[in-house]
Image (tube, rainbow, N blue to C red; front, side, top):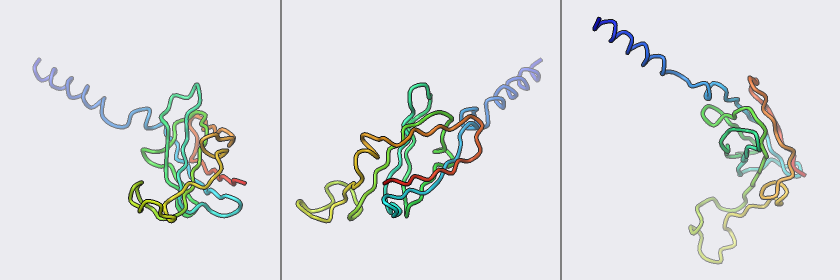
Length: 138
């Protein structure tokens, strides 16, 4: 009897191991982002779930015009508002630059691409293959 209890306990523990169904539903996404025909060298792309999408906000860096949401930062199925920020100037944290310095890092895209985004919402269907999506901002 004792052996059966131990065996059942082990089987229950093993059932809880492995990937959750939420992790298995994640879709990798990548692409390029240009502004006025030029790749964005440094920036951030943010996917904000719209009403009806049960997912966290996803954010990843843009480097040399490329971005990718992979592994644990991959995207759950649903519809997302897209926000893109692009930066110029020296990298660093706020306060690292001397006061009044003209070389501090600045976000240069118009608000229509970020704080008041008019970029068409992006929909990731369930059981989707990896998504390749480019953004050509004008």
